Image (tube, rainbow, N blue to C red; front, side, top):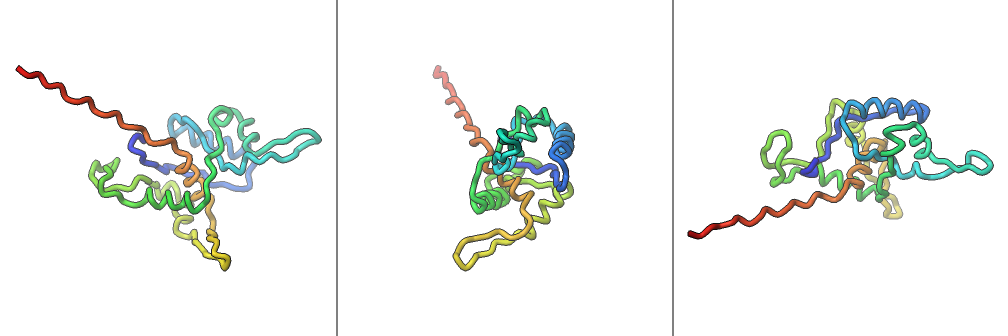
Amino acid sequence: DRSENMFCLEEYYQKNKLVSEHAAAMAAMLTGNGKHRSLLIDPSTEAKTQVGAKELTSILDEYKRQGEPFKSQLQPAKRAEIRIGINLLKEKLKVNPKRIHPFTGMRGSPSLFISKRRNPNGWREMIELRQVIKQSGDIEFVGSDHWVDNTRYIAMSRPKPMEEKPEPAPEYIYV
């Protein structure tokens, strides 16, 4: 929203389906959630693979073949190292004492809101995902992270915050 809040209202969490089946289910879900300016997909779906003697295609291409809203609105999310994206989500979940809560109007609010009832897999992943430091010193995330990946892609791909227009200086009339 205009206050840079992010709302996770519903998840689509299925596997072992055709792209056409995923697309139909997601399009139906999107219909109930209002107008969308853009739809994001995992950036790895851009990878082209050979399907014929002279044809290259990708999962992204397959979704775009499914028609609207995918054809015109679907774009790959911005690539970002997983730790950066997860850190951003943690920052958004942290309560900022100056931030106005969008539901209560009171000060003291995070900027990421997740419907627990409609995002059960997201809640499970956030609880179970673990950070492990390997012997090499590299950090690895262990556990299911499909929902977390999607959410961090959205957070990393959001447009820059809107600049607030400065209020005009009051005009004084001296008599």
